[in-house]
Image 1 (cartoon, rainbow, N blue to C red):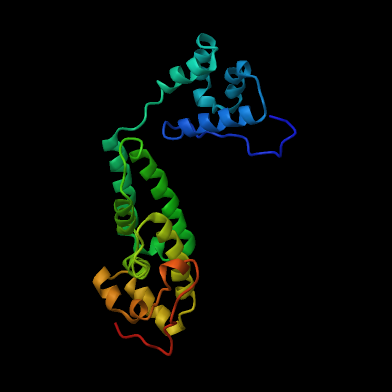
Image 2: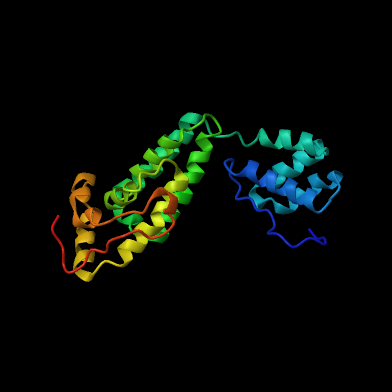
Amino acid sequence: MTGNLSPLPEPTWNGTAGTIRQFIRNFTWLCKRHNLPIDYYVQDVLNYIPAPHFEIWESVARDHPIWDDFVKSILRYYPQPSLADSSGNLGALISRFNEHPSHTIQRDNFFSYLRQFTFALSAIEQHRTVPKSEKVSKFFEGLAPIIRGLIDKHNPKDMNEVIAASNPVYDYLGLLDSQTTRLFGQLVYLNLEACQRSVIVQGYNPLSSANRDEPGLTVVSHGQTDT
């Protein structure tokens, strides 16, 4: 697609039912942004369809050349996962991370879990409203207990506050001395209560909720390794 507007990434689709609606929204929005006549939408969208799905899309396009009719028809081939399936997928994700607490002790891995969690949660939200407190508690279930203990000291009320709290937490961990870092490695595999009693969690002093995006910490040092 071309035009006088600044270029945007081309819409992509990975061939799954869980992402097709977002793909169609992105494609439609991009067409409108570039003032593409709606009569061209059906034929143009075929350029973005993975090969294993192309035949069915082409067949539907022949039978439904009008865009709105085409969208309704093609979506019948990709039903949304049920609430039970979506809940099961989220539960499986949480269990996988819960079984391997070391998978969230690094900042990059934390945000990888966050992205996967958000995607799985969005499928549930197609069926019901998920309270903010439930999102936080579910997300915490997949975190390493030591990370949960530190973030929990910020008392986050929603996922935005969890994200904001995570940055000073990982900044704090990056400033631990070598002996305390070894203690941290041991705590990764202990339960939440043990982590909460540790000098690492006890020594962490988050700032007020108004400044959660700034590091608020008392660095544990000088070999304080008591748990």
